[in-house]
Image (cartoon, rainbow, N blue to C red):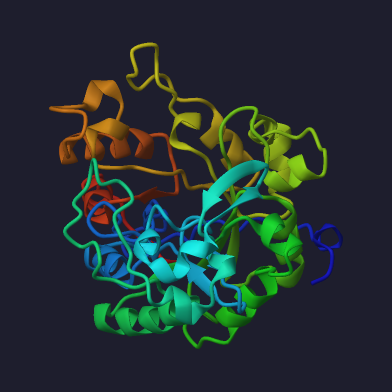
Length: 371
């Protein structure tokens, strides 16, 4: 793959489509899209075909596969390349010797890593619940790891059954790390998307927490394409891994300033900030006063797609919680989503798309979510 740094292509951000009323020339408000975060991951083990199917059944407009690489160059859906937290790999004696320590994005990580396994080997593992203290483990040991090719075939099938457009929002995980070990994903992902009859024309948004690979992709994806780019943003003074590795000083906080957003608009179509960058919590942990981030992003043509709404009290603002910390609180989650919808966000990620659907539809939004 050519150097990402040479791939920058300034592009105009793509605005959401607008539905026109039959009775009036006044455009209706675009419908806010619901993104199934790792599928319906509050209900089923994340990144399994079952979790994606549940998300679609529950009304998600997009499903999200995080992508990492295998030793034999296959993209599979896992949130990290270290898989002990979401599979039963530790219970496989034949893989005991594969346990190791690596430095990933500047952090030492111990465990088992996808790049040390072939796809066939990973297919012998079963997925398990990441958060057993909060969510059901009833489905542990039932579902296998899915490859990108399987997800694309599944998406075609599900879109046909649902008789509606279903978008795909893949995230390229640890891109600088995977490039450093000879397993870059960008060109392989584009080839897979363009080689599939559905994703070649259907709604796709590629995400990354890094910058260089999105700039590279911008040079590969023409303006007006069905494929959009989403710059993910983390908290405060933390840095994108590619910037940190190169010794740069740019932080996510700087990227969320008006000047930083203008720069992002040169290569991406949207930003994906952490929720509290839009509505911070006050000293008591309750929802505070919204920042100007949504307004500032819209001013330079960027859509805003924050992450992640979760249905358990543990993750919710203190003023919305009801019951024990680990209790499911659907009412609080819907209320939290609606508070963010009121700021003007364009879409959002949620672990429970059924609640996201209720939050959006209950606000009376109209229009096409998957454009």
